[in-house]
Length: 91
Image (cartoon, rainbow, N blue to C red; front, top):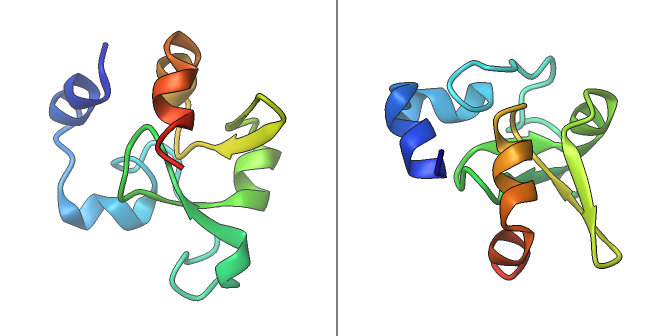
């Protein structure tokens, strides 16, 4: 499954971006009020904000070539794992 397939299958809308990948994992903290150093975008689902500490608590991150990448939902992990170079090169 590609990120585009996941996006379409889960009926993502712009409204969903703030809730973490169409509501798969709602953030307890609002990304718009979190410390900017603590927030990043998911590389697999661009536009979905990720609060780094919450992603780490949930295991929604990958370490690749000495760098940590945070993900917005569990679906993004296998997509990243399948082609880490693709996603890591977008940073």
